[in-house]
Amino acid sequence: MAVSRVCLARAALWGSAEPPGPYVARRLQFVRSGMAWEAPRSSKLHLSPKADVKSLISYVVTKTKVINGKYHRFLGRHFPRFYVLYTIFMKGLQMLWADAKKARRIKTNMWKHNIKFHQLSYREMEHLRQFRRDVTKCLFLGILSIPPFANYLVFLLMYLFPRQLLIQHFWTPKQQIDFLDIYHALRKQSHPEILCYLEKVIPLISDSGLRWHMTELCTKMQRGTHPAIHDILALRECFSNHPLGMNQLHALQMKALSRAMLLTPYLPPVLLRYRLKTHTTVIHRLDKALAKLGIGQLTAQEVKSACYLRGLNSTHIAEERCRTWLGEWLQLSCSLKEAELSLLLHNVVLLSINYIGTRR
Image 1 (cartoon, one colour):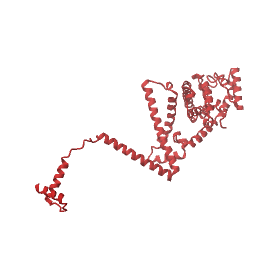
Image 2 (cartoon, rainbow, N blue to C red):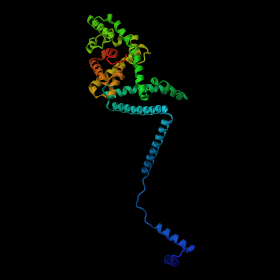
Image 3 (cartoon, one colour):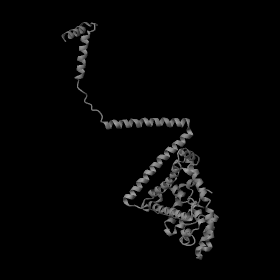
Image 4 (tube, rainbow, N blue to C red):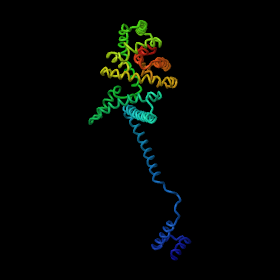
């Protein structure tokens, strides 16, 4: 030990470049390692396993977002048309999933508090109604996908027939306008047939006053005049009993009314009558909830959707006109009883066929 110290002192004083011997070098390494081993440890604490997992998850999520962004830019540059379809499909899945969670939350609340459907708010009732229709359409696609390798055929059919097989979440903005126009054109084809049935039942009306009112109403409709609310309400007795009550409608009348409501007409008369009753009852309950909420509380899109459901092609009509028309509908609907729902069903034609601004 003394020798090593002497050597170090000589090297420091005289600047000798002579390296120390191997024994001295080993002693120096041992001393240095011992000094390093005896140094106090850092006071910093290590992260817990949970914090490590969270940091790993955040890192993976960040990297996934970066890779996903690069993938989107690649598709947008090299496959622009496919990228548009891909974006719409992914957004549609997100919206459908959000609708499913909201519907589940509403149903859970109904079960917990013993709330009936007609006791819900307008937006909750409308959400459940639309979600049921969307799920029915999606279930049809699910059934087609059951056979092995049939999912590839389903994707092809979805691409070729988006109006028939897909819900609105998966339509492009242009398709939404075009498809709604197509659906309205289909239901407009039944309007002359429904008016023809109204003219045919005029001789069957026993009351002369009601018979005169029905004749005047049909004449106004044929001339292209939009009827007033009091002209329609004057005939409520005809639509509650014979000959235009819900239980007195003939099969051909129910098929025409089903097409006007965008319901399938290819069912037996018993099922047609049941579906028309159910659909009209739901709209009547929606009207009462909407009257309680107030039309002014609806957004522009909600107003147009409500008008389209009730027979008006609102895609090409200004928002203010849609609100005016919806106010007329609510005034008439809230004046009717459940026994007079046949009149509400016919209003899909009576109030929409000659309204100002509708497309011919």
